[in-house]
Length: 339
Image 1 (spheres, rainbow, N blue to C red):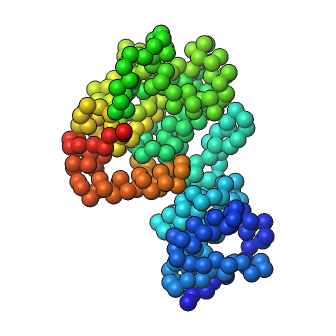
Image 2 (cartoon, rainbow, N blue to C red):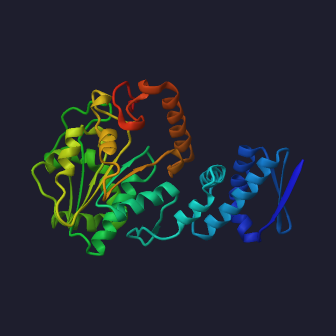
Image 3 (cartoon, helix red, strand yellow):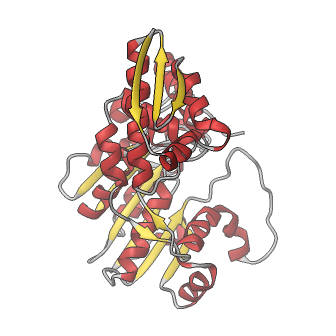
C-alpha cells in the first residue's frame, strides 16, 4: 500500500472535496485510490504509486485552479486529472490567468484549457483564424467575447456574424413569419452568446444601429467588410467555394474567425464540406492562424468530453469511412449525422 500526505487548510479542503465529498469520490473512482482527512492533512492511499502520485498532483492543480477563480466541481476534477496525465498542468494554470472579457453582469470570461488559450492568442495575433473542434470547446463563445472586447475598445466599428442556414438532419418545412423570423432559428446560438456578453437590450439597440449584424452566409456575397470583426460559425456546413467567398469579403481593418466541427456535417454529402480543406490550404500563411481543439478542451457537462473522445477514438480506429475530419484534409466517406 502506498501512502502520501498533503497539507491543506480547512476552507481549501471544503472547496476541493465538494458537496458530500463528490469531487473526492470522482477522483477515487477514476484512480482507484482512497482520500482521508486527518486534521489539516489529506492522506492519499492506493495500491499503485503512480495512481497515488496522480491524485496528489491533481489535488495540487485543483487548488491552483481554485485560487485562480475556477469553480471546483466533478467536471473540474476530470479536467485537472486529464491535464496532469497529459503533462499539461502548468499550461492549464497559465490558461486560467488573464481575463478575455466580462459578461454584461460583470462575470469574468476566461480561457479554461490550454487549447482555448491558444485559440484566443491566435485570434489576437492574426487577421484570420480558423478553429476546428468538437461541440463544447467554446469556439463560438470565445470568438464572440473577443469581438465584443474589440468593439468596446473601438478597435473595430461593427460585429458581423453569419452561419449557413443548413438543417441539422431534420426537415423544418416552411417556417412562418417574415424573412428575419425564418432565419432566426439558424442564428439563435449567436444571439445567445451576444445576450450573455452585452445583454439583450444592448444587442437589440446595436442591431437597430447596424453595429451588430447577424445574417445567413448567403447575405455576405458581394460585400466588402471593413472595420469589422467577422465570425462565421458552423463552417463544416460550407463548401470550399463558400469558404473562398466569405474569406474574400475581408476588408481593411477587419478580423475574421471561422469555426466548425467536422464531426457534425449536415450537408447531403460529407465530402462537400470544405472546412478541413480550407484549413489545410491556408495553414502556414502569415497572419492566418489554424487552431484545432479536442475533447480535452470541452467545457460543458463532463459527459460531453467523454462522448467526444469516444467518437474521436472511433474515427481514428475506423479510418476514412468515419468522415472528413482526417489529417491533411482529405474528403470523402460517411460522416456522423446529428439526430
